[in-house]
Length: 417
Image (cartoon, rainbow, N blue to C red):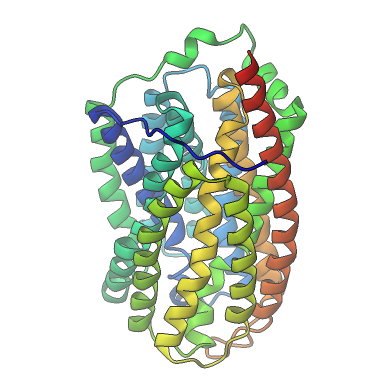
């Protein structure tokens, strides 16, 4: 059966465009707060004399606490005004990020990252719930394409600027910068976003805990959760050690590292909207599969590099990012179509939690696989991570296929009603 192309495109209202902007810049700050740990990895490891295993724990501290927070709030996600929920957790995230910038020891840093994760880990799922409430399914590919441009924007603007000010004033400075930006964003949410309560009218009379158990008990939801966890493991394993690998194995200096992330970010800004529009017109699983196979090929090539000229590293990194980015939008669009409207908030919270927890496990496992004899030595066994990522990706393709089948069955049943 050939996939049917969408013949009409629903226009976006002015307020919807504002919501897209707010969610995108919110995602930008949250993603930057998490992503900046990777480019700062080499600086942090040398500044605090950390081994890869210890740095992996520092990265996973955010992920584990974010996962726990998501599970604790999952039963409540459908019970409140989504604007108030977003504002509460985002304000906590901003305050915690400020304390990350004030940390000067490894224990304080890990503690601050745990608190940041408790608040920041829920924001993505709240944003997804807002999107599913305010945008039709035919619009979500475009919306996700723009909102998830926060990932690319964090690399184009956030990470290079963060690296630059870190080189000038220390690794703590980027966190203070994110906290200042976050305070402005929180004010915009408070004063300009309208209440989002449409989902409250159809809620069943069920306690938060029973609502959580109900969501987890659904077999089709568990399939979606598994697919998300596998998708997260494939990305988190390599990411924390990417800057250390570039500097110590590929021969990239700190100035070139800024350029490397900027070029990859510009490529993401071009790719994400294109894939978003494509996901609204083509079969999402087909796009996901092609992107996954491409990513596996590039991961194997990239993780086996040694000293390499900067221009070659840039090209190979962009090609690898094409595969990684092109997987995110179709898989996310499929996941948002899986839950019923009364379960969306809980589903998104649990989904985000499992994503974070799986990422935390991946960071810890990655830190156990990768070793470094001293600060000046190359990372060892980074290529092993590449092969592990490929194996996980194959499992992920199978699980996303099952999600795709469920979504198509749900759409077909809705058309017959």
